[in-house]
Structures are given as C-alpha cells and as structure tokens.
Image (cartoon, rainbow, N blue to C red):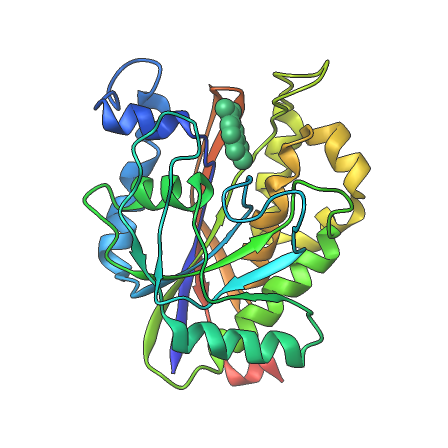
Length: 285
Ligand code: DHB
Ligand code: FE
C-alpha cells in the first residue's frame, strides 16, 4: 500500500531561482532562508519519497484569467516549465505518475470534487522552486501537481481546501501500490505584491498559521477569504495550498521543523516539515 511519509510546506518566490542559479545561498541576504533547508535535505534523504503530490497555485503559465479552474489535477507523464518572465532559468521537465494521478482523480470525483483533469500541464515557479529547494541536485521523485485557484476571485474557502486535501489523503492511503508519498504545499506566507498595501507582511498572523497548521488546521477554517486577504495580504491567500497539504495528512501529524524569515523579495518566507503516521486501527475506529 502507498504510505504518506509526511509533508513539506514552503514559499515559492521566483527570486529564489536566481539565487540558486547564481550560487548565492551563503550570502547574508539568503543564508537565513536557505539554511532552513539543511534539515529538509537530511529528512528527505532519510525518508526517501518516491512521489510528491504538490498543492500549488498557477500564476498564469498554464491557466490564465480567461479559464481558471478552482481545482485542477495533473495526469501527465511529464510536466514542463517555461519562461514566465521572471528572468529565472527554465527548469528541467519533471516526470509524472499518471497511474497515481488517475487514482486520485477517480476518488476526488467520487467525493464530489468537480476537478479539471490536465493530461498536459505546464508547471510554474510555484512547483519548480520548491522542487529545487528540496532537491538541489535534481528532482528524484515523480510528481502529481494539484493546482488551487488563489488568483481569480471567488477563491475556494479554507474549509473546502482542507476537505480537498483530506480526500487526496484518503485516496493515497487506499492506493494499492507500495509507494512512499511526500505531500507538498507551496506559497505564502503573508505577502502582497500590488496595490497600496504592496510589501505588506504580518508576522503575528504567520506565526499563528504555522502554530495551527500542524496541530489544529480547523482553526484556520474560521477565516473567510476577505479576512485572509486582510490578514495575510492579497497573495498571502496562497496559504490555501498549505491547508490542502495539511488536509492530506489524514493520520497522526508531528511538526519536525520550521523556519521563518522576513523578507525574501516581498514575502514572509516560511518552511515547515510535518511527519505523518497512519492511524492505528484502534485510533481509526
Ligand atoms: C513573489 C512571491 C510569490 O508568491 C510569487 O508567486 C511571485 C513573487 C515575491 O515576493 O516576489
Ligand atoms: Fe505566488
């Protein structure tokens, strides 16, 4: 059976791609952020995932405002990146796992999630940056990308994203193949890139979200999308990807690591590692 080994959540700021390309990880501006990945590298080397299910939001590379699904699941054999205009190197294509994708799609539709299925899908910096952060030497895992609309309102609620994640988590645990699965949530934390509040960051709310995401994700469901925009910034709603990631951890969860650093570009940069263990039969009953 497939086994969910845990999750990594991380910021996906494009400027990180340039810092990697220019080997600037140890410069004073970047070190406090990149050093937060030392633990992640050790942990990934230990738990050895074979596939990563990545909750992220597309920023206009694969979907644009003309057609933007609330939830979309990749079912492609390979996912390519293209130039998004950020001036960062285009990443190598990443292998997909269509069999796992279709299993998740079947279960999501059975659970009444009316998702868009993408047999071709470009992945943007919200997938490629986290992959390069986790595996600087190249991505050794296959991926299933799941995109959540955090761009064009109306956005799905926090509660809905938690449910989406839970449906994915249950589907993963019922996948008959032996497979070590990592769940990834990207984006956030607080940031706003445009308007009169450009540069807005809310350290207190970010800390609250990091405290709750592992132990009590339902607490975040109390926030409406307009309230989230107020508290986390217009782009801080990328927190929805973290919420879906957490939802997919349907068993026992333990926080192993966190790093928080302000700012990277315009963003409060955050990284977390959550360990997952399936519930024992008695706990599940
Ligand atoms: C930045 C942050 C993002 O989440 C993003 O998608 C693009 C840019 C930034 O802070 O520069
Ligand atoms: Fe973003």
